[in-house]
Amino acid sequence: MTPDARIEGLLREAAPQAIAALVRRHGSFDACEDAVQEALLAAALQWPAEGVPDEPRAWLITVASRRLADRRRAEEARRRREQAVAAEPASAPGRDDTLTLLLLCCHPALTPPSQIALTLRAVAGLTTAQIARAFLVPEASMAQRISRAKQAIRAAGARFEPPPERERADRMRAVLHVLYLIFNEGHTATSGPDLQRRELTNEAIRLTRGLHALLPTDGEVAGLLALMLLTDARRKSRSRPDGSLVPLAEQDRTRWDAAAIGEGVALVTDVLARAPLGPYQLQAAIAALHGEAKRAEDTDWPQILHLYDLLERLAPGPMVSLNRAVAVGEVHGPQAGLELLDTLEADKRLRRHHRLQAVRAHLLERAGEPLAAQRGYLAAARLTTSLPERRYLEARAARIGSSRSPARRTR
Image 1: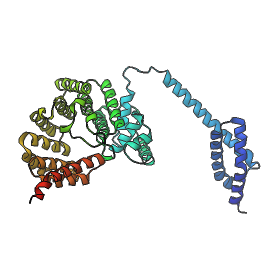
Image 2: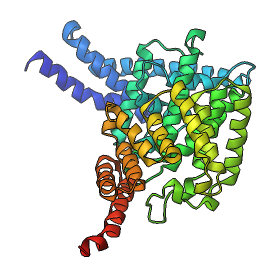
Image 3: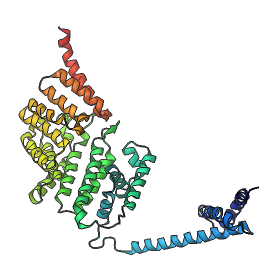
Image 4: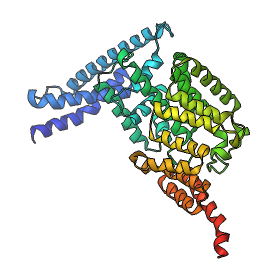
């Protein structure tokens, strides 16, 4: 028998005896079993070099007992630290743990998906399983993403403290962007069978409301909260009982949440009067104009177009340009909107996005080009990964086809 085989045999024989001795003496099977496993690892490393002790079982019990004692001392020290923290005032002047935690979760070392996952886990308190379900990924994959995010923060040397003043503005922008992304994913899910994911919109509003309470003078925080409230106010009217999507112009506005609209309008009215203009405030002002219109035809599209002009100068982006094209089509006619869309075709970020094709189809339908509109709706339906949006786009295409079929039959 080789020395390694002999040692392996001794360890296999002595391990259960050592576990039994420790459990009898200390209780807690889990802790004792872990301690013996650590002793076995130490034996496997030491015995081949230093020789097998005269009493292998006694050696394992002694080493495992020390490991167990070390662990208990560490646990007691941790408990004392927690008790000391618990004894501190819950709201010490100037201390802001929630904001600090949000800033930490949105550390620049993380990608936006990791920032979102870590924010939902650490700040919103959602379980890994809940986050995984919200984003339609396996729980194991989400657990790995969160674990990697924690490792990245540790590797970056981040500490649980407010960032340096020179980084504060950028980090706050990241926090607001993450909350905005969480809300948007809840408002219109990018994939899957459901149009909306209420748990995400709820958490985004709750976190942003809390942030507004912490930073009541921050114009963009107030703007983002107003935007969320005004947008979420339409939630009940956005889908039919079968889950299919209802576009804004066709929604039953009596089902909109008047209280949420009132709060959102008051927030954005106040912040526009006192704070430097920001992108979230402008988006909230646009949402307020939609929310205050009693009927779709009452919408103040010229004012909305003016706000989109400001937004495009302040925070240009493909979705801002796309939404502005819709407003241009409403104010200056569908052909003007289509001409603006032609200039967006070169943007790689939009070229394969279903909304570009959907907006084009809508404007073509309004311009009296049903065949081109039908093709556009079907193209948009092929690009989207949201089942409710796909069904809506296919239904629009089918409606155009059915309205054209009598004319075809009379030829």
